[in-house]
Amino acid sequence: MNWQDEGECVGLNPIDADRFFSDDPLEQAIMAQEFCYSCPVRDLCLQTALDLSLIHISEPTRQAEIS
Image 1 (tube, rainbow, N blue to C red):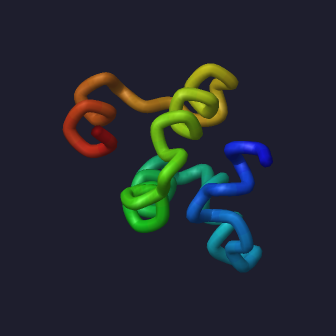
Image 2: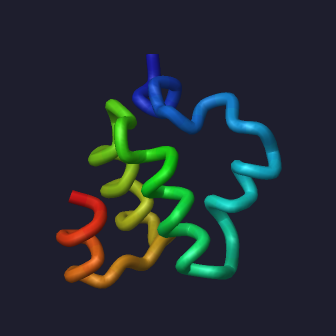
């Protein structure tokens, strides 16, 4: 099984899924806080997104809100 199959976001409806890819960084952050907080693969997913430049998070935000 792939780690991506274990994410809290698996099976999201298309409207919520589109919010992850919003042009609005605030909406992306709110979505991440709502869906990713209790996700068992959160750290791996975040690191993958940062590595692939899918999201851009400042260091203070990462430490204060995502950790």
